[in-house]
Length: 127
Image 1 (cartoon, helix red, strand yellow):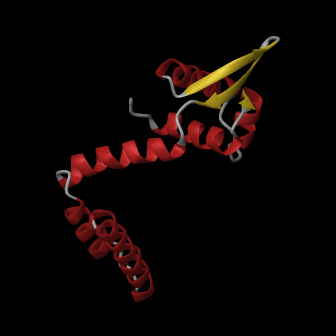
Image 2 (cartoon, rainbow, N blue to C red; image 1 turned 90 degrees about the horizontal axis):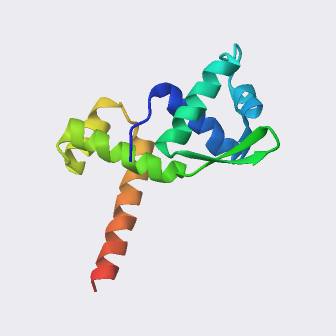
């Protein structure tokens, strides 16, 4: 999967939220001041070429829809970040994440519960 620029990722976030949209709908989703219609059009066309967006033609208009789910892109982007910054080590990431983000006790306890639940699932799966 190809990487997205910040502008492409922003357009995708709006399209993921809208699910299906015409270009004018995507432009309208941006906060004021909205980027120029032609700027968003260029970004959307690049996303079509990269295979992130598909479209259906309705007369002279196109209804765009995501071809890649936000969850799949998030997983891909996280994998790249993990590889680039933490040598593919989740434990290095967890250490950085918990130390550098000044997490309070409540947040740490929530993470602990999630980890314990996942450990339980893995153990049951292995049994």
